[in-house]
Amino acid sequence: MEGEPIVRAFGGGDDGDGPREGRRRDPVRGTMAERLTVLLDRDVRRAARAGSSHDWDIHYAELTDGTRLFVKALPRTAPPSGVLTAEARGLDWLGRAFGSPVVDVVAWDDRILVLPWVEQHEPTVRAAERLGRQLAGMHLTGADHFGADWPGYVGPLPMDNTPSRDWPRFYAEQRLRPYLRQALDQGSLTPADGRVVEKVVDAVADLAGDPEPPARIHGDLWSGNVLWREQDAVLIDPAAQGGHREADLAMLALFGLPHLERVRDAYNEVAPLASGWRSRVALHQLHPLLVHVCLFGAAYRTTTLEAARTALRGG
Image 1 (cartoon, rainbow, N blue to C red):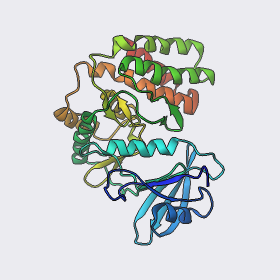
Image 2: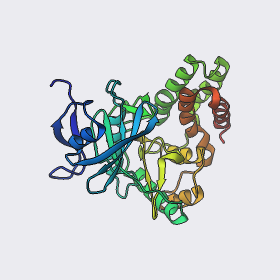
Image 3: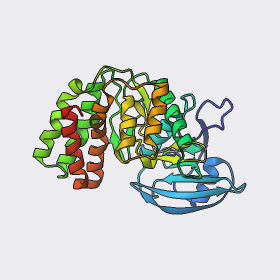
Image 4: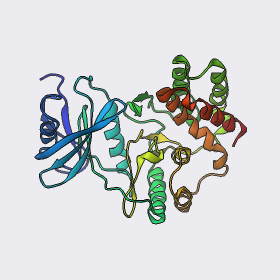
């Protein structure tokens, strides 16, 4: 039927090099267990809804062999969007880096994303150090340009991934200005607030430090997107893109991460950060803070303005 999604599953193709096409299916009919059985081409014993996050529902599922899965799905009444496709493509792209710490993708289409269930443990110094080294390796894998080859999302918000070779312009015009404009339009920032942030937008080239090549970054790396396992950590929910590598580390610091100093020290052993990186932390934090203002309103206004003023002072 025209308009039906094509199932894509990772790791199941003949060559193991990315997605394969699967059977066409009705995108919304049947129970979640039935829909997953068709998507995975494996028997699903049970699937249970466990709440919602942003514009999608969360489900837990279990195969007949006991394998547990984590599922994101758009509500049946919601039109298809690119948000789950962007996440799946981003995870696949990040996962091609040697030793990448991102979670594997099990299967996806434009309405459902299936990931492995992650058994979580208390974070350890050893796991933090391994994460730092893996993150450095992922960044050093690099990207062809700033941005990405697919339409982007950060959380539920569209994100302009149009490729660019100029990071200051890319960051100012595709990462800061759109969300500043949205925050002003919805009244979460006042015009006076906007003028403070606008000064940063206009000064990115002067604040950015020495040029760096595009890094392969997670793009939404707050502590909630780091899941600690017994020996290591895995990363989930990316806004994957070619970006500035300092952005991931700055966001890890934004809401706090256990053993962050050990993560950073191990990172520096593999890929030393450029001189003056501490003075640019607030600059890189301004994008996720503006996104939070757009999503959650004026609760993040004060923190955003503090970051803007700190960025203008150069730390």
